[in-house]
Image (cartoon, rainbow, N blue to C red; front, side, top):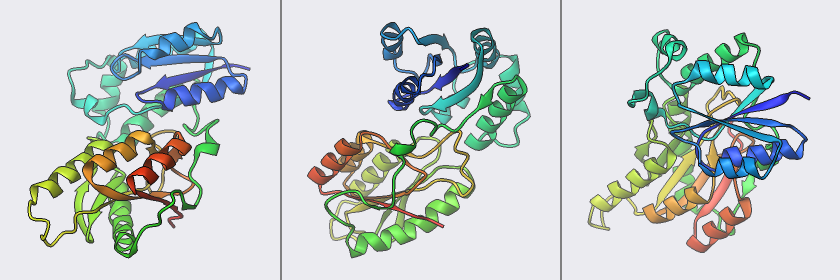
Length: 284
């Protein structure tokens, strides 16, 4: 079986996918992004002869292709977030990435990663879904915590789904934060956690608890209408719950079948301890 290429972003996602791929007997070549990947990836490679790690800068698309070719990689997977704002950072793209960026109609996630996927495909490297080997972690419909959403939270979920789906259509973000059927914050390139934190700051800035808006925040996270499962799949984990608790959010609604939940037991325990309701819904 050919080696699997793993383009590793930040967080635990790359490690979970790596473990799952190794459990399926795949030898894995990790393209670790210097600006994003946890340095612990080196220790993971030292502990397993079937894992090979190469550190690359985010702008080195040509080197990524060359590395995979030399290692005999014909299939690759992306796992872990690469912050969208990195596109506008001081990172210098190589000639191949610079050409790709110049030809994009818009620098959103789908456009950028879709173009990278095409370049890889043209070089004989198939990009497979980022949920490969991790399908058991996809949320199934139903209540995921002891507490169910209350009536006010259910109204916020219904409204939040409408807003989030419209937002996702433009590939801007997948998360909205609602209070009393008012949109407090929407996600752009800052990411889910920063969006939730900003919503908490906005609510605290209102001052008087007797204001029109209720204090509780409901977070709604959805996939895009035509979600490409090769990249940017919605993910939640313990950090999501901790961020919600700190922001004063009391409810999380996510899309079933298309959202990955990491450390499900810990997520439930932490949510229950904070009185946060978490529910997975089928969205059509």
